Image (cartoon, rainbow, N blue to C red; front, side):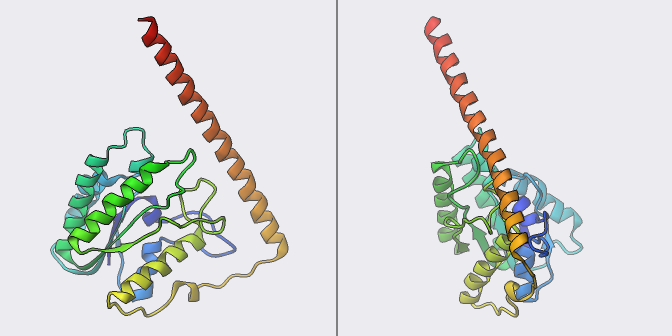
Length: 242
């Protein structure tokens, strides 16, 4: 299994009730019983997959022309949250990355992004990006996992971007369901590969930590929105003075 993407696919982060943070893609590979090769990097965009991760794969892989049972591409979260979001540029680079995987993998899985993305919210841009991903998947025959409705305190961190340890598992479970429907044999369910124990005190402490972090993110988001609006007002005033 070969994967490209950003920090969500790269994985890493805090324990959740003693369950280690692992990439959803790693859980998928374990569920399928496949060796896992991951070139995802934190903060990357679609253009970084094409001009960074894919060239790294070609340079570093012992057999870069080898075929894979499954290729996975989850990219776009950093694209759509950026101030310089460019739908046309994203669409071009996303399709290039998808084409690379399609030429080397028996099956390819791509993922859309949750609509409730980020603080400040990325808003309607996410739906527009998801439509581009869906169109690319439909036209190329790629398998698609729709994460547009993924949400929840247990699944998404306070930044409303990164999955929790349980969120990564939830994504993997949904991905495996799509792959199983497409004919792949699922040998294990990620939710059955973990054990955890919680108490009312742990739950209370976890809720308090989440509330504190959520408050910080919301305050920062409100500050950014205010700053952006103030800047727009000043720019408009300067333009009128001219």
